[in-house]
Length: 74
Image (tube, rainbow, N blue to C red; front, side, top):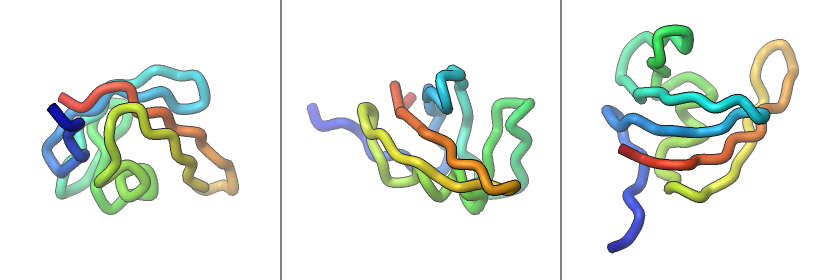
């Protein structure tokens, strides 16, 4: 069975700069401390459409590059 692409509403287990997180992608405001990330935030845009096993990076403010490894899409 092919891996599922990340969509709004999905819960994603990922590693960001060696920190493991479980986040839900939403179509509204996000709060990473509550496990919710907005689809329009830089992190949300970086992972939408990707699959488990993908590795990407995103630059956030202040200028900092986050290395993201997607572990699982729920």
